[in-house]
Image 1 (cartoon, rainbow, N blue to C red):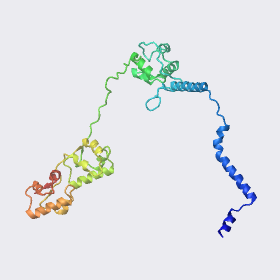
Image 2 (cartoon, rainbow, N blue to C red):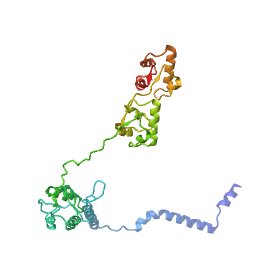
Image 3 (cartoon, helix red, strand yellow):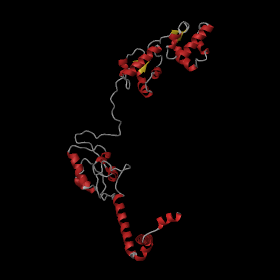
Image 4 (cartoon, rainbow, N blue to C red):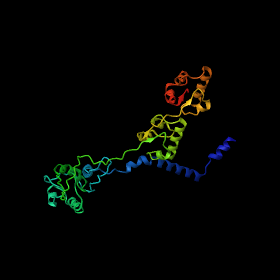
Length: 317
């Protein structure tokens, strides 16, 4: 049985055997072809002299390119200065001009040429003066379009600007500028002011102004200017700007009696809140009325910081 199965799969006709034989020959041929190819292909001869010439030409081209761009006058941001024109063939060549003292407001075209300034730049200067322009100080020549920084540095020590023709003395830039008398700044009493006066302060809008007033009412008044800085939502930078305009010198703040005040009355104060107000009431119930305000410091929850803030609002009478 097995012989019949094997013979049925491995028995071929004459044409099939011929096809298999040809297929095997082609497989072997294509497998060996990459190894046989070098035997039939001869490499081209390389001329070493031509190769050396090409390398030399590339080096010359690289040096020429570097020479064109390395001396371009760019700043640290890879941009040309605003007062320097963009020229394809600009190089930092030393000027051959003659140096002498000159007034840029009266110097002629010949004088500028003697100084080594280019013709286009001279035309720019004369056009500027013709339209009413004027140089007031030696540093002003640095604003001339087309006058490069190295030229400005070379010419500036030789600039001498005379007084103007209408007998107005030349400007003295060494003197401090004249300052107008500033109007006196009006002070704002933070215990009597309203929102309109606060809104006039820098950085204070209607919401912040109303918050300051509400905070003042809950406290019972401010006893020092620094308390305004505790207003919710008021940036410290804004408070530093306005505190010199504020004062807190109008009368005493509103006080309440810690021997008669209820828990609700005391906890409504921003500096007491519930835990401290409740401790004061419990201490009063156990030990009797307070004989002085500083007795509340015997309560553990009343720290020195809390006492220093709230003491101005408390009384025992």
